[in-house]
Image (cartoon, rainbow over all chains, first blue to last red; front, side, top):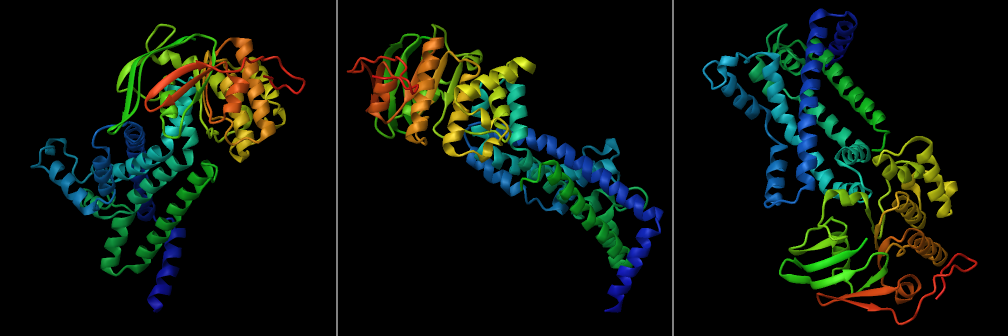
Length: 230
Length: 229
């Protein structure tokens, strides 16, 4: 059991030593996951609101598909994106495989259904009421969108945080499309997986602490910004 | 605002909700809309508010068909009004801001609307913490602040106590008299229809009939602010 305690001690030392590789990995993780969550958040919010408010044929079936896609396995998404972006693939000429851009693409595909599903659910349950209020008080599209974002701020923030959490914690997709290349595409989760398989528990534990702390901070920040309504 | 209904049909699944051939509601009337539960009163009202589409037929507003611009002249008040997650003053100010009314003019009109409903002390309260009765008063203040020409109200006093109902009715009648707006009030109370309305619309078995109320109504305001019959 000593190795666990030693692991925590070494992790602490590693974190305060300002190790360049460790902080480079943390930085890349934050950039990739934040950008993925922002892009997915934007697409998911618009799509979720639109499809949630709109009455259309097959809406129930659409909802089933959407909820199923919320649980997309990361390795499957990674595999699909890798096939598309590999040198012999249909988008190989873009030379994106094993780059942070490929990781962002994979994470956007993974996170967009999650944000869309949550926002869709919110729009179905509460959106119509807000929309009708805005309409009957004479609001235009912009005013109603503003009202919608304001009224459902906490839920939309929760959708974004969930998306960010999914992006920053997944390992399967970024491992496949990023390749875990040191100094280029190595992120926290792939760093933990790699060091764990090599028996470097200190590094793994250090990065796990950072990962948990970041998730906590992101949640705390977003809920504070949303007025801590949840 | 004059309303003209032409061959309006609405179904819920296979059930015919209403089939109204032709009906004209002259401008400036205060109409009570009554009928059994499930007769389609709310659907008809929402249709007039542009929130629901008919299966067939149309409603004309001062002779013109529905267009989005009408949302600025019409308001709809539901049984349980939705309160925005903001102060009461911000709730009442929202329709004004949506029309570009800001600054001191907005504040003045909000203050006046709250005073008219006798709730100026609620201005800084968070609207989501109000009781049902307080929320309905705020909702009426918010609905009237931009002076709509057509007011569609779906049992707005259902959750109010007697005193609040009287105030609500008196303010509605006062607004109607001052502005000449057309008002349609869904109610289950024949007494309320007699107190407030000059004509009654009766929706039953998919038909809508209009009739003058049996009693003549004098809207002279009594000392307590309630219109008398």
